[in-house]
Amino acid sequence: MNYKTLGKSDVQVSELILGCWAMGGDYFGQTEDKNSLEAIHASFELGVNTLDTAEIYGDGRSELVVGQAAKEIGRDKLCIISKVFKPSMKHDLMIQACENSMKRLGTDYLDVYFLHYPVPNEEVSIEERMSTMMELKRSGKIRAIGLSNFSLDEMKEAMKYGDVDVIQPCYSLLWRYDDPLLQFSLENQIGVIPYSTLAQGLLTGKYQKDAVFTDGRARAALFQPENYNRCLEVTEVLAQVSAKYQRTPAQGAIRWLLQTPGITAPIVGAKNAKQAQENILASGWEFSPEDYRTIDEASRRFTDSLPNYTLFFNTEIAP
Image (tube, rainbow, N blue to C red; front, side, top):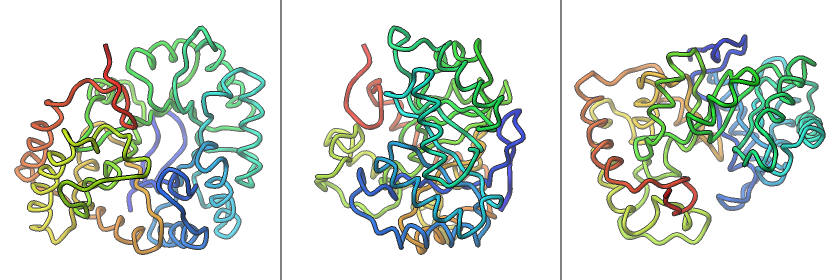
């Protein structure tokens, strides 16, 4: 397992980050804390020292699980990332939200703290949001500042008022709206840790054409009938190329990100130890340049045909 520095900060993360959203047991269906803890331990034993959570994941449940794992493993051995959600963007509310997250996580500092989503300046100015983050950083309660789901213009505006050490965009073979953001981040030494790297399972090869979903995925853009089957066509190409390396489509999708310029470390979820162990097999090898291009071109044919969706999790199209 390789380790990388987030931008200009002194925070080091494993090249694969364990995503702990599903451990909240809400959006993706019910989970058992025992299985979640086993996933964290299995990941750590294989070199993954970085855990990504947020106050909104299961209304704090994910943070509680990560906090329990940190107690068992040792807080100083882990890099813990969390996020503040939209209702807590005003100064005093953000300070309290950070304290609440730290309490659930059983720690007196966060390695990275993210503004989880942008909010309109009319509600809370970006100056106030970033000034509060800088206050938390100066006090030692957070070590690095991140922006999640921010556009390039929104990030540039935030940078006027404070440090931006890392961004967290939605980015995968099936969702590539943020290419300019990646390029800007690469040029300005800003870390990039993308989420939904497996497009909520579409890149795993486990889904069949014309499937119907009833959980949170039913609202997401890529799971709509006009997109769903075409997503699986990309997965078929991915599966064929990955098989040459004795790897699954999921491992190939993660590997593609690890080889993509501008990506620091992809976030990959796991609900149990078996999934965590399978994720690790994306590390330690590489696609040839030709095979990387084959996958990349299949991806581009699909993503270039998509409408300008505003967000992965709904079907709203930007004006």
